[in-house]
Each structure stands twice: as C-alpha cells, then as structure tokens.
Length: 322
Ligand code: PMP
Image 1 (spheres, rainbow, N blue to C red):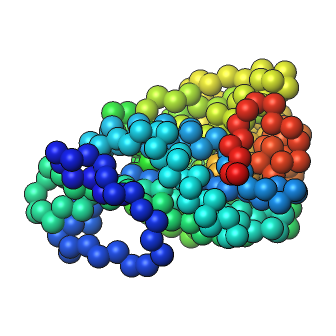
Image 2: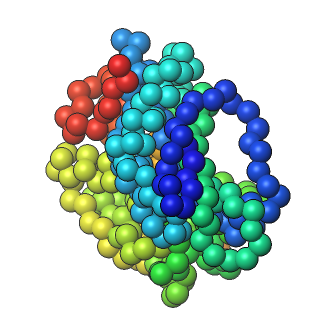
Image 3: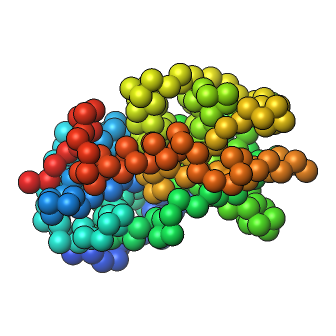
C-alpha cells in the first residue's frame, strides 16, 4: 500500500514476492525512517490457521509510527490486510509442530530526497516466510552477557519503538558478547548503567524468591507482546508479579543469597527462553543449575498451547483465519 501526502494511504494490493524498485536517494536508506513488526501464524492440530494477538502488533506499530513521524494506518485496516494475505497464502503455514509462518509488516520512507525531514511518500509492505521450530532439541538455556560499554536506548529516545536503528546500534554489543562465547546481550539503562532493560530481541524476567519481576516500561524498552501475555498468565495462575526498576546489583545479590530462582526472556521468536548463564563483569551466575525452571516451563506450555490450539484460549488472544 502507498502513502502520498495529500492523498493518504491508498492502493492496497497483493503482488508476487520480488525485488523493490527504490531510488538510491530514498530517504529510508539514509535517515532510517522505518518501522516494522514481527508476528506469526500457527497451524493448529485440526489444520486451521490462527494468529496470536495481531491487534497488539498493529497498536505497537502505530506507536512506533508516531515516534518516527510516519503516517498511521487504521489498526482494523492492517488486520484486514493481514488476514486477507494469510488466508490467500495459508498453504505456506507449516504443518510441522513448532514451525510457523513468520509475518513481517513494515513501513519505509521512499521519497528521493537528500535532507533531514519527514517524508511525503511511504510504502507499507507485509512479507511472509515459513520458519522452522525455534527449539529443535528442547528448551535449551541461553547464555547472556551484561553489556557495559554500549547502550541500546535512553529515555526520550526510540527504545519503545520497533525501528531499524535500534537494531543497528545493538550489533556492536552483540558482537562483543559473541566474542566471549555468549549468545545475547542484556542491556542496562542508558543513564545510570545500573538497571536492567531487555535482551537482544527479548524482554527479560527474573523469579526472585518466588516473585516474578520484570523491568517496568519507561520508554526505553520495547513493550513485548509475549511479555504482556506472560504477565497476564502469571497473574491468572496466582503468581505475584511486579513491573519495576531492577538493578543488576539486586540480581547479583539475589544470586549470592540463593534467591534467584529463574531468569528467562520472552519474545515472538523463542516464546520463552530460559537463561542458564548470566555474566556481569567477572561474575558468572549459573541460574537454576542451567536448567529450565517451573515458571518458564509453565509459561512456555501455556503460551504455545494457546498458539497451537492445544489448550483453550481463555484470554481471547487468538484470531482465526477462516
Ligand atoms: N525487545 C526487542 C528489542 C525485540 O526486538 C523484541 C521482538 N519483537 C522483543 C523485545 C519481544 O517482543 P515480542 O514479544 O512482541 O516479540
């Protein structure tokens, strides 16, 4: 679908996958005026296809649009477009358990213009790709590394928006983590370098002395849909959940006192990703003997159970493609 100033969004269409024709001066290539989303379509045991909370993705997309001065699209129009596309291409949703169809909606500024200003012309595109099971050998705990040198986001910046630059600036920290044989970076806040924020492409949770704790959303963390769902499930199951500031010192102290029960990440790709090792400077914390803990397992089973239609959706999260 195209946007032209004065005309608004128009010309929604479905075309075969192929290269785009863009001017080398297209503004998105130079000034990063771009936003995107990521969600999945799942095949259920009875063969039907369904989406998990797609309205939340489109709500977040419009929040990102506002921050990046990109014209919004009505959430119901984006949902209609997505449902139409997935219905048409539903043979691409894999039948293999755990596999899914990954969906990537995005908007780019396409004006050929050299100079910093909001564009007048945009493209909204949705691409689809089958993706294999994230865990082929069970829920293996990941190793994460507290980043001290670089920051990902600051308050007042773009941390809460899903925009390309947030990912580009995270690459150097990620490379550093890989050099030390760690898989992902745990980002600290950009001001005091003290409070934990999120991990690579996941939000982070801690179970401290039986309580489920996750950093509150203060503008520098992406409001993950899996995060929101995990909080709702934990509350429904009777866990005490708090969204608050958590310093890395508090995590280390809980670990030293034997009270750091579990650490896990949440995100569309992995759903729940247990953390087995957490490195902060010279300190390496091995969490729950590098095994998945009960809260992580319960969340994984509940969330994937709903996504794959194996357990009833008591939250009303599923949107069926029919
Ligand atoms: N944080 C970042 C930076 C991400 O890219 C993602 C993945 N979208 C998440 C958190 C998790 O968000 P969600 O649960 O909506 O996938």
